[in-house]
Image (cartoon, rainbow, N blue to C red; front, side, top):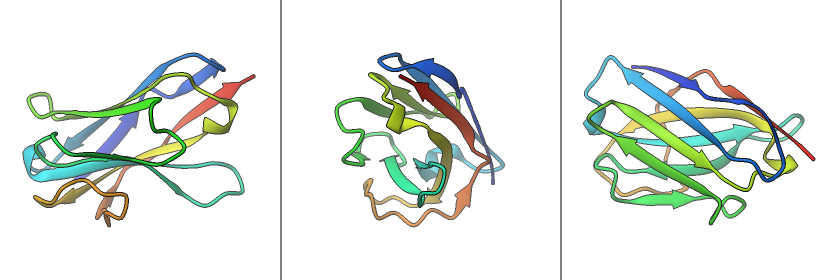
Length: 123
């Protein structure tokens, strides 16, 4: 399984950005997926997760109401729509995958991780 995240960049506070993640090598529909992020000098933080069929979602407290995770099984793509960005959202964002039929949860132990994409939000 290979994961490739894209869509990061530098934006101003209040702007929006959409991250994308492609999964190759396996049946996309069998995988729950998620996003985590790591800011400089901080531990990796859970951001969002979505189950295999795209119905169940979970979010970290710091992004609830601002970020939306979605999954396009037809295009084998995972997305993270980020609105009302804040400087504290600055981090490297990683997408991840886990082959499971379970519902989305902040406690999901993902098996596969992609390279991150950097998001920088300036005030």
